[in-house]
Image 1 (cartoon, rainbow over the protein chains, first blue to last red):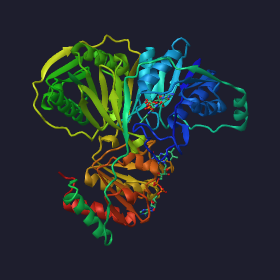
Image 2 (cartoon, chains in turn orange, red; image 1 turned 90 degrees about the vertical axis):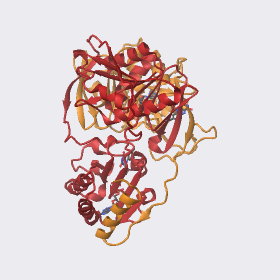
Image 3 (cartoon, rainbow over the protein chains, first blue to last red; image 1 turned 45 degrees about the vertical axis):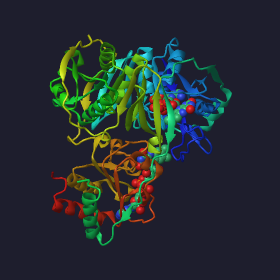
Image 4 (cartoon, helix red, strand yellow; image 1 turned 180 degrees about the vertical axis):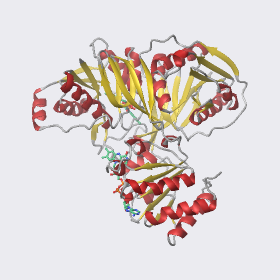
Length: 249
Length: 323
Ligand SMILES: Cc1cc2nc3c(=O)[nH]c(=O)nc-3n(C[C@H](O)[C@H](O)[C@H](O)COP(=O)(O)OP(=O)(O)OC[C@H]3O[C@@H](n4cnc5c(N)ncnc54)[C@H](O)[C@@H]3O)c2cc1C
Ligand SMILES: Cc1cc2nc3c(=O)[nH]c(=O)nc-3n(C[C@H](O)[C@H](O)[C@H](O)COP(=O)(O)OP(=O)(O)OC[C@H]3O[C@@H](n4cnc5c(N)ncnc54)[C@H](O)[C@@H]3O)c2cc1C
């Protein structure tokens, strides 16, 4: 079995967002970059499948040289090989999906694992777009995955519960928290990863369908008000304010 | 035409879909286009209600092959309807189904897609979207280059507004079957309460709740206010038996209720990321220095175990939530 894992490099969750001079991108100064957390569940699932049934795991990222950190980490965690598809602008999720589809289409992957969304961009779109471009099945926001003979059974999070999706392989599966508990890289893994090389290819030329034309910080919230008195008085004052001032009720 | 994919539940249009449809009406008026409402399923009984939200045309793809949700089958219905009607804008609510099917349909149409948007407008005949990025720490304007533009609308942001439309009905063919993936079973349909992402009032608890059993007092307050209960990651990860589906934040649910009450939550940046889109925020915390107070419209410095029951009592006395 051949598994592809798509990993995106994103700003750490602590990042204070600053808008760059162009008014439409993130100012990269002082940004600490990490692997998108949901992609870590995707990678962990691939490694567990490899350990359980035997599989070849290829880690892939679309981005600049900086994204090599994500791939090095994936190799240390147990990916067999890593590919960086180098592109200047990663563009929109549709552009990323086209780049990955162009790479993956003749390679015979049985399973493609992604995060359910890239932290920050938050489109939650690349996976289903890739599935469509490759003409394969999809299952999104997955907390449990079982593979059969050329089939999969996945539990997917929905409003107020979950549902079981069944389908045929190959498939694109996007991971949600709960799918597994990602491991940390071992020293042995880190040493072994140092001997592996990251394959670098130019990203295929693609059409961009959507782009960010402006980025702005949210408006400041107005200063709040503390409610005084004992608990009963505070409770009364709060509900009154919510009713009369905020008109929530 | 502006086409809006709508979901039905128990023969009624789901609220997030009604919101998307209302926004579609507004965009159609602004750009002199027609509004189409699209339904798919084994039965589309209830689709006629779309006329109330301004649909000029109601399209229904009905058939046994659509009895269970299938990503590729529904994507086929959506993409075929866009082509058949020459629609240039395709919208849906950012629900579990909407977020699953729209990107797939978009890719089939070579269309750009903006997810979970909080603002839409028509600029030079094309859709333009505003959406929170970095989990609400910034807002991005998405401009489209493609002939067809698609987006999902965040629940509870766009008002559902009634406006009569012609509501002419038209049946579409349902795809034949043999789909790549199909939903086989729905598990754990919760108590009939709305999902956090659609809730109007949310009462959330954090580490300050000290134990999962104590969430009962939050349930009582939520019930009194007609809301639902959420949690911080610290509470979900504490081993108190709270499911991850309750988690609000950057790696949980992003919510936009009218009222968010944070009880015993400090206001870490990853938590704020998930709830800063709330219209009104209330913080109840014993630490006056807790960062959550910087965000709150109203703050109560005090012991939540005293304040929350008083709130429930007062809410009941004032008859709040009973309307
Ligand atoms: C405000 C803003 C401005 C941006 N500006 C630029 C810019 O100027 N230049 C630029 O290069 N990019 C830019 N980007 C990033 C680019 O838009 C994103 O890469 C693209 O939109 C997909 O990201 P997403 O996280 O929304 O995708 P999602 O659809 O949420 O991603 C889902 C999954 O797809 C996979 N995936 C997504 N992207 C990649 C990837 N690159 N490599 C491997 N796997 C991936 C991951 O498994 C991920 O979990 C910007 C993003 C934002 C939010
Ligand atoms: C990658 C990453 C992702 C994350 N994602 C999320 C996420 O999605 N959602 C999320 O919430 N967090 C997330 N976190 C965790 C986040 O950083 C915080 O650790 C977490 O939000 C803290 O939860 P808390 O406010 O409940 O707990 P604490 O920070 O411990 O705060 C507890 C508060 O309760 C108050 N308190 C205690 N007792 C009482 C009482 N009797 N009455 C009143 N107040 C009382 C205290 O004063 C304190 O302010 C993430 C972290 C990382 C690194």
